[in-house]
Length: 338
Image (cartoon, rainbow, N blue to C red; front, side, top):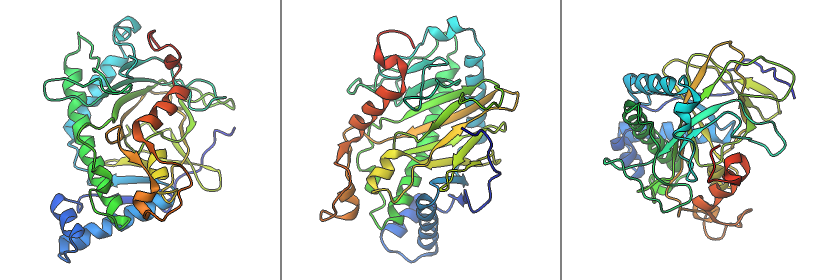
């Protein structure tokens, strides 16, 4: 498998300004209001719709996440990953997929080598730090006792990234001529995962060992904040790999498998990978957005009851469980550390 990738052209991964997609503008667009705000919101929705039918990867500017929130999260994440393994092992990944996933704990394809990355994973919790354990992929977050600031910074970023995800999902709905909140009807207790993903420096080589190997994302939508190191590559429709380099002030957003399934493949979930050949550490801040686990993923809800769906309806939670069982080694024996 080639590790070479072409430079990205603007037509490959578009840049979309999300700032016109305010709550008021979304409401105006949703109610058919032809005000300037409503028109602007519909233009953003049309751009998101077009991009999702192409490569399914988008650079987003005007996202609204404060830079200090990103900087705090990044600093705390580096403090965690640079600590010794004994420190990190105290919060080894739980059966509910919360905590530290050590290097080698993930494999994105059945026949691929394990990934070089390591991750710290958390999910939704209320303002008192509580999380319900009502699904196999939801339970208490695990925060390192000697790094209390990690919880504050991680949850701040998690909530800010969710606001971005909600606006994007409303934009996608408008682009599909659906009510703006169509994809958000059950989002009181989202099963989303936040993760800090750390990539050690690696040599670029002809083998198939990657920071993270070629894969598509499992869920509905991924919101990614890159650093300035680079290494993300996306596979285009011809099967060639193109670079998705960092672009200051932007996030990278990509369609996941569940949103592709929900839209009967109209929105593309595209393979991507990471090769960190920079000689430097690389860190990504990731939100894997998914609604409540009971949410039914059914293309007939998008295209009408007469539509003959190519895949049966499935709940968001059940689908994720199937994919997690294949990708994460610790789930073969979830009572042990990864």
